[in-house]
Length: 114
Length: 115
Image (cartoon, rainbow over all chains, first blue to last red; front, side):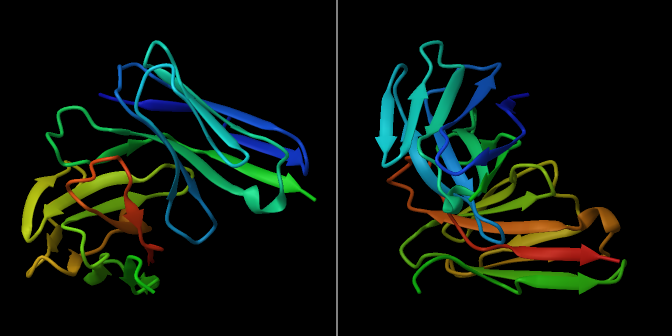
């Protein structure tokens, strides 16, 4: 079936450091999505990518849609304590018609030491 | 607050009991989803409604699970004869069909613990 593999599984960094995480898939996708989940909350969309090779920024966050359409990375620059949380890549499922349902990776847990 | 709201936020129950969760989506959203999330995993799709019609159910949704969205507004997810393996966070999300951008608006979730 369609699966998304995220790495690393977890990161523990110092405030101010840059962070990079990625997501790979065995299938080709037309969309890459990055969500963040704060403790005790539901996931929130950070960045959406709709075109192979696309590079998109949202403040200190930058994400790229891989040329092969099978991978994506998310970078966070100059991390701050509120960046703590779980970051998920997600895709709109193939064969789902137009339901808009998503599959999610396993997540990358980020902890930031002040 | 005009976001997705879920109730209750936490539920502890004994094995074999029935539980029901409620979700109130963003009012203009016609799509509603239920997901389940276990520790260390991403959310897994359970079921999808467009307006009041339940259009898709995952194989994860055993016959002990039932979901409704009677008037195309709020939704309920009921689990009958709960098992310890049902312990998880149950997330509700909504979206507007025409957008189809991949953006789902999630509620804060209902955490179920089955003893």
